[in-house]
Image (tube, rainbow, N blue to C red; front, side, top):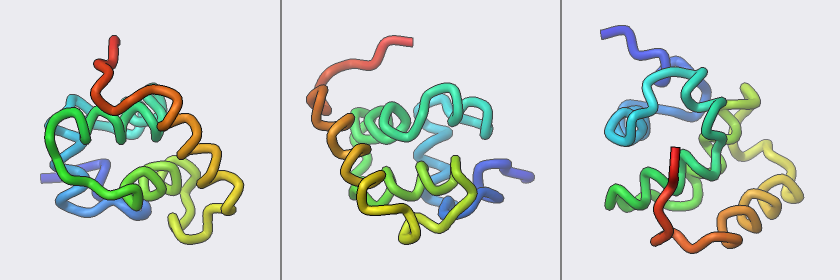
Length: 92
């Protein structure tokens, strides 16, 4: 199986499976939702993903290793995530 998500930086088999389970099947799907919404969808589905997945998705979108994300960007992602509780449903 040629899985586009697994070819992105930071995303492996498990993270790609989680993203597929929430309806994200391509880079364009991921771009449309953004890192925070994609991460929130995975968590709402019940997967026990750590915040590293949030950074990994953002890194995948930027084509860079998640650990190379500037700390300011990581903080901004966490602020966006905390703006809405994880138990809030995503519309769209």
